[in-house]
Image 1 (tube, rainbow, N blue to C red):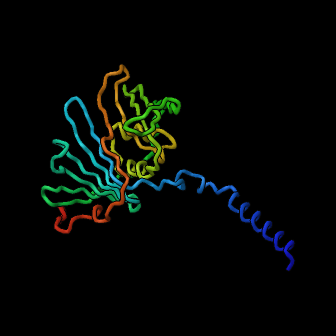
Image 2 (cartoon, rainbow, N blue to C red):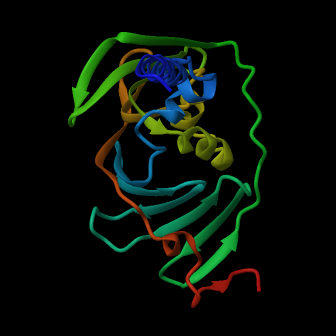
Length: 231
């Protein structure tokens, strides 16, 4: 085979390889799920402040598993209550560490709200850094309920959060209002403030620790020494 032919074949192969890698990716590959940053795994700790009390919450997140720990008395006190969420199996287990007991929680299926009194402003141009995280402002208002909640959200592949809120299906406004916003998948609120429509502050939720790290599977299991409350 002549050098000229070898050279032509070499150039042709190079062009084919480059074109193959230059082809547009499919929609899944182009989504945030396929970015260099994997779905969030790690620990998120935040504080809830109201007029009457302060409560600390900690999320442990790994794949479709979430563990929630609640400290009602102080930041470094023993865990008051804990809950295990399986987002794939759609199950919740409540645990009482002080009693070493657990109980399966009855699931209420999430139904999307048909409330037309909500108004939503996703102001992606209104941005600021909070504790080093780039955040944009979302505001959700319901005049009938005399409530407006401002969320400062960051996009970091927090895909668990929407499914988590829907599985837990709480009636409190911080969760309900957040789920009114379309396309929340991947976003997480670093800071949210609930006010009356007259700007009276009612509640603040703020992240005080956010750490990406691999977690042991044992974190999401019921300790062997715990007894079933229903037995």
